[in-house]
Length: 95
Image (cartoon, rainbow, N blue to C red; front, side):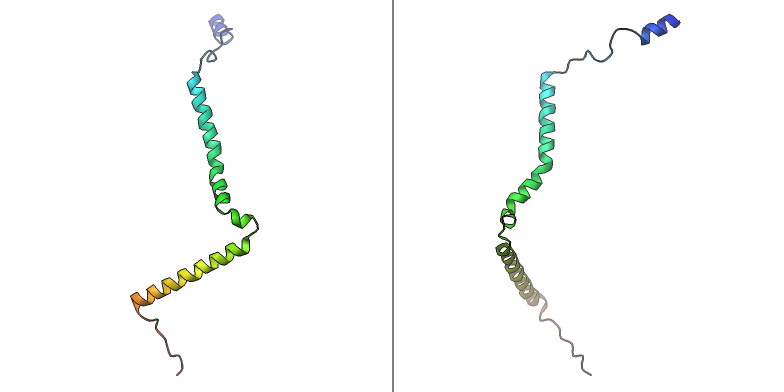
């Protein structure tokens, strides 16, 4: 019994290292890892590309453009709100 125990655990045969992985599997794993690693930084690169004018030093122009858009949007929303709900109520607080 002791002899079979020793021969089982101390055998010269390796277990599990003789498996051959297909080349296609290795290629797919490499592609998957590459896409995963690249996909992590893709949103950052697209954000930097989209907002390149801000990071290039032309911040004043971009800020004035954004403030102008904000003003026009608020003006249009206030006009639409007044058309839908009527004029804003005024309260006389003088007694």
